Length: 311
Image 1 (cartoon, rainbow, N blue to C red):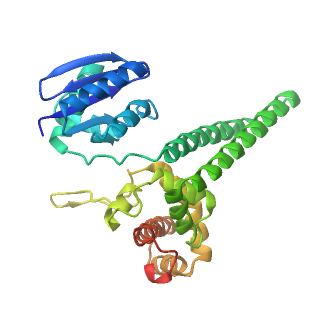
Image 2: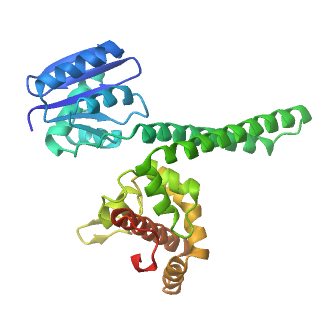
Image 3: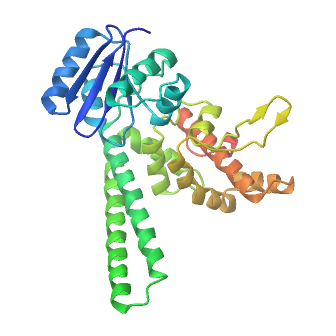
């Protein structure tokens, strides 16, 4: 894959490297420049355009590329960093990063990302904002433990109340957006039919894991970081550990998994069997988490609501 383009995006600029001709371009991140760049890419007919998921900066350019029908892969930045280390690229500038991203695309050929529903994009932004608000609320709650001054205590509580209101407002926005998209609404209803999964968790899953329904069992487990990873070398056999994947999805699934262990007969039976077999309780919980995401992926693939036979 020689006709691959790598794009490194920052707040005000983006750098482009084209493998086909080896050219580099440093471009101001403006609407006009985005349109001009997309027109150039349409003429160049690249096999793949690769960019990192930067937490939002990539969205304006990515939306225009999707609208033009160009093949775009939005990848985890950690994969790019690991690739740079593997090829011995230690220097780091925006231009170098664009070159590394292009080489990553040509070498590993990540699959093109499906054009996201606009409602999905907005919900992801809102979900990220909710995580920020909850982090701030936790920090303020922690400060109340050490507050001995009445005014300070009242100030902390005022901020906590405000954050609670903002979190509720974000949740309300998400609830109104999902019904506006028939595809999201249907998938959320299917997921919510799983005993132990509520409305908020279903909403988070359809937005943070849009691939649900298209994955294999192993891919679904790996994407959530609930699949055991081998750590063997020679005669050494390391302890299997879970990790990686989308930590926000794994964190969000924790409480629903505990609810499913109590109220879902299939998950409760699976958990009890693991614990009776000598597994540590937390190991059993993670295993249940993995089983839940695999079942939900199967439900979404078959477009069917909860049925114990999925287990």
